[in-house]
Image (tube, one colour):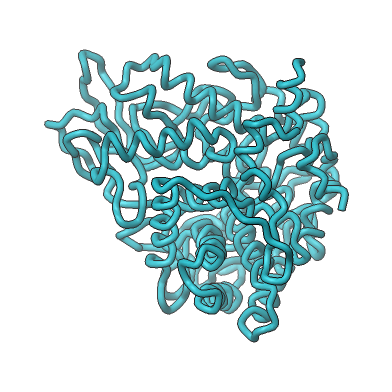
Length: 490
């Protein structure tokens, strides 16, 4: 391994990773009383995206419950994962001056109070969750289970990461900020992580009151890392200490070479991003990554660069690939088959799109999701910044509006074909009708981590959540392998 490769894999401050980490701002203060370093100044295009994506969360939250919709502008139901991103957005908005600290605290308290007051129990209906977990989707007005969706371990975890980040930021003595911390701790303490734990030590993806635990567990490489870390860090109902080691045993089939990179594969890029929104994996590594002279942070960089290389090679012959890239789970034009440039293409609706690089569950139909490449800006700052400019310059307001980029678009979709949802535009081809909270959230949060490291700092280094995070990482066998991981030793 060359010195530059070692620096990259261990989190040493190479030029690329200084940029990806937000430069000298990696250890900024979280609340008001700690020393603060000036954040990087985003270029005007990135700054505009940062503000508009914050506006998405601020404007789409329900005024009576503080819950965030799964999608907008058709808020049929709440996604509890979107709530986690929305609470984190409140913090970013307050720090950025988009709203006042008091406004952000009031909005956050409304959301947390709704979550705490929502009824829990084993019933099929009339409840919001069970054992501290929440159902994947909730009614926007009543906060009760939406239809027959699952009690979700990962969506509860995404929500909880936002809850803890919010509480870490609001460290003041006002009544609202005190209540935010009280409710956040109570919500975390109420989750019985052992309820989802299998005899194998792995965690189930969820539970239905009608049928019990879902058969599929969080194994192999994906966003399930977040679930294990929160479950290990719990001070009330933690899972067994060996859970992470059991999860690691499922990783080898995901390791391999793809489009010039060797890494842990997971096809859609969101699996390389969600955990990294809140957890700072720079300069730390568990036993698996140490055995491969790498880190999970560097793994996400490699996965992103592999996707970019795939777009440049464009084996599927899709339009605009190369300067335009980024595959992940997103909306699509619908389940329609058509000929494009003499080739038959099976278009899809909402699905996981990506490379065949570890889970073999993804596909590519030419649909680009802006969140995929943009949310990797901490890993690939030059590539992701260039992508934002390309999307703005090439497609303009066909895909960019008051609330940022629409969820997805497909330049290869035939202009004379009617999609099942969305519409067809002259340059962008098929364009989604709106936005998804779980795709908007990583854009805003990763732009902020690139700019200042704020979300990482709050989750991993604050007095509120830092001790639990460090406990979880240590139980998982993480060690400091680079300067940026020094916080783990605190």
